[in-house]
Length: 110
Length: 110
Length: 110
Length: 110
Image 1 (cartoon, rainbow over the protein chains, first blue to last red):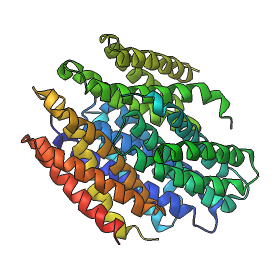
Image 2: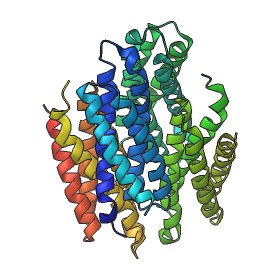
Image 3: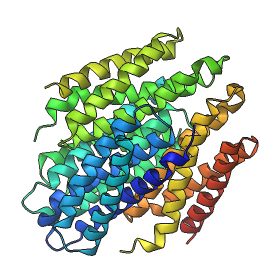
Image 4: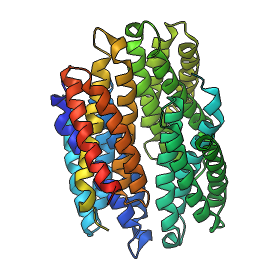
């Protein structure tokens, strides 16, 4: 068993989870919170699935591909929502989601 | 090792996590989301620590007391915030937080 | 949004997570741990995906079906492994996995 | 709110969670699993509290210090157990636990 083959994807998922959590609480501090509601909702889910994916990869689970496929889907959805908002926390989160999605897609399609 | 001594606390923590998650997304659908921002923030944290506490109890961790003490603190804080809002999801969540806090305090002080 | 439609599945997933965590640490205390290694490995993954599924349902996520489908797969796999061991913790876990799998399959196929 | 002040601790916690998960499943593949049982048990708990700590820091929770204090305790305990085993996965995990413990202690005592 080899952790190395998953290491860059694990790191991308963890980074994405961090920026999603940060984006969620930053959205909640914006003046127009209502406009950010969908972003918060997706951030919460994306952070959770990213941490699960990171853990399943570290455990070399037989379900790594399925989990990464689902994780990539959520990352793409969260990225698309974040792109619509100009705040730095949303733009950073969109970039982190994109990297995580790309890494997860590579694992899912390997 | 005996699961029974923790079972009612585990159930209360899981119930609390469920109502916190539900309260968070319900708050995000309210007209005045800004008023609910702190509630969403606490719901997110409370759901997470409740799931960790449930898992640590199920594993009979040596850190059950410390985790339950911290979980009770967060449940009390989340309960107090939810009490201030009249929506059904907040009132239900407050009750679930109260039960979870009481169960966790009993474990922490045993 | 309605929590009721997911409540019995959420409860089954939480129950499954509890018995998986408990089974894992109980397996680690058996005399012949080596025979239980695969059971521990599956318990760990099953507990994690069950808690994620419970949380996604409580949040009424758009990905509830996908997560429940994957959760059911892991529950079935964990159930099959646990059935092979006669210890009470494995037999209880197998039953909890079965109920969780059935509930998740009902959601996934709804 | 500033993510930067927590970033190195978040990274250390995520790294620790990864090596704990990897160490747990690697221990389960060792010939003498029985000797590794306590290591698996601590790895599982350490991975969970590290991910919670990372998430609470990313959310700038009011409970960051308490969570980091508890996380550091578990990291130190897991480190001590891993030090006793010469396998590469245990030695790597011990180092990751040490770094995470140091970072968490710095936050807890700030």
